[in-house]
Amino acid sequence: MKLRIALLPGDGIGPEVVGQSVAVLEAVCRKFSHELEAKEGLIGGCAIRAAGDPLPQDTITLVKAAGAVLMGSVGHPDFDALPPEKRPEKGLLRLRKELHVFANLRPARCLPALAELSPLRREVVEGTDMIIIRELTGGIYYGTPRGIQEVNGVMTAINTMVYTRPEIERLARVGFKLARLRGKRVTSVDKANVLENSQFWRETVTTLRDKEFPDIQLDHQLVDSCAMLIVSNPKRFDVVITENLFGDILSDEAAVLTGSIGMLPSASLGEHTGLYEPVHGSAPDIAGKGIANPLGTILSMAMMLRHSFNLEKEALAVEQAVVRAIEAGVRPRDLKGQATTEQVGQAVIGAL
Image (cartoon, rainbow, N blue to C red; front, side):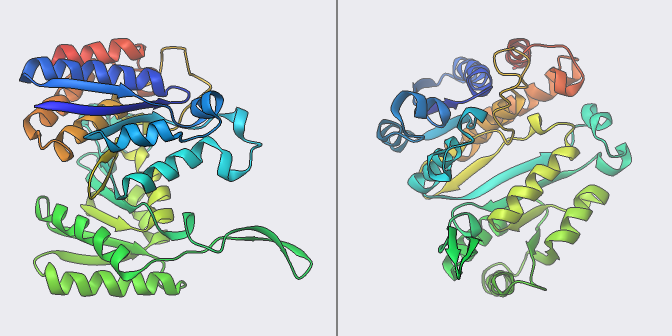
C-alpha cells in the first residue's frame, strides 16, 4: 500500500517527536512492504512566523490531499499576547473544522511496566484499559455568541455551549460501534443536573442506544463524579463518550493512569481524512534538548495505521514494540529514565 501522509510537526517538541514517529513508520513500511509518501506543512506558531497565519492555505491544501495527517503540537509563549483568533492554537481548531473530524479517540491504558510511575496505587491503575471519545467540533469551543464585550456598561465575557441532535448522535455512534469491539459498555458523561444542554445530550444518547444499539450497556455519569471515578476506580470504564470541554479535561486527567501524559496518543476521526496527534502540549521549556518522550506520537501513528489505512497487523506491531522497548528499560525522563528522544525511537525500531 502507498501511505500518503501529511506531516505537521508544529511547535516546541513537535518536530522532535514527529521525527521519531516517522522513523518508526519508515521501519514499518520496510518490514511490511509498504510505500511511504510524506509531505510536511506548517501549523501553529511556526506558521505564524513564516506566513502570518496559524493555518496557511498551503497547509489546508496539503492535508486535504493526504490519506492521513500526523501532527506534533502547537503553542508557544511568544504568542500569548495575541488575540485568540491569531494564536497558534487557533490553527488546530481550524484544522479540525477543515478536515470535518468530530470524534477524538483518546486511549488510556496502564502498562504493567509503568504502573509504579502513576501517582495512584498500583492496584488502582493496573489493568486499566479505557478510551475516551470526545466530541471535537461543537460545544462551548465553537458556539456563538462568543467574545468579550461591554454589556449594560459592564465588560462581559461570553461563551455558548451549543449541540444539535445530529452532532450528538454521530459522536455516540462512534462510541457504540467501538464498544461492540471491546467490552460492550459505554459511559456517557454530562452535567444534566445543571445544564439543559446536557439534559438534551443524555436524552439523545439514550434514545439512540435504545433504537440502534440495544446490545450495549449504557450508563450516565455527571462530569464531576466521572472525574473522581477516573482516579479512584478507572477499571470500571471501557468506552467513555462526552462533549468537547468535558472530554478535553477528562482525557488529560486520564494521563495519571498511564504514568505520563507523554504516553497518550489520540485520533480525530470524521468522514474522510483522520488527524493523529499526541495529547501532550508543545513543552517549549524542553524543546531542542532531545529529552522529549516520542511514544505518544508513535502510538498516535499506530492509531493512524489502524483507523485510516486499516492496517491492524502493522498497528499492533508498533504497539507491541513500544511495550517491549519500555520493558527493556529504554525510557525517557518523564518515565524516570535517561534515554534521549532518538534513543527511544531507535529502541522501538529495534523491537519492531
